Image (tube, rainbow, N blue to C red; front, side, top):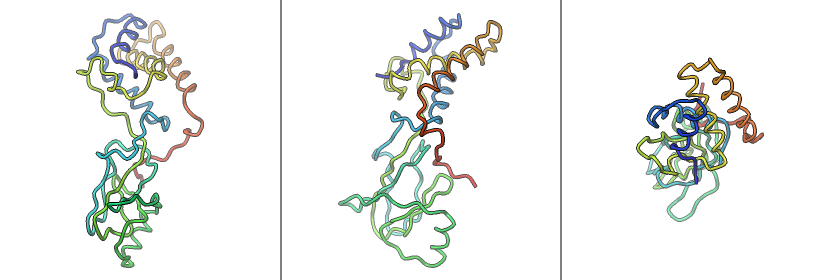
Length: 212
């Protein structure tokens, strides 16, 4: 069971003394989900070899796109049609370029480099393979039409309070509710709940996106 958007709306309307429809606060809900997504490697956002995330390699495939929504890459394995290999070793893009310039041979990829939203295989594939990705994702966009769909928000029940507090904070900011202390109150409440939940090991993360 996950957090329901209708319950978020009811909670926020009561705490902020408002009468917003669900559609009125969808942007604020998304802001909070996006914010939480970036804070830690949450188990609820882990993608483990989902078919839609796989990349198909054929002969001379040099690069493939990272899966949609990839935030933190865990590892990649190559399947040769029968067996999964060991997780690939990551090398720098500069090293990948040097190996290509030196005329590295083709074969089953054993290493990869990243640049932008692509992964570059080393060696370049010599046959048909499937690349399987394991990663933490950004939270996908929520849908106002899914009123009581408990799968629309991927975070579980333990996130109920932090999401509701966060949405109250975002709604208060949207409507400039400084009078009455709503922004400070709910901003403070949100950060307290975040601090309770965020694992220490996730204070520093490596993003999927490459930056020069």
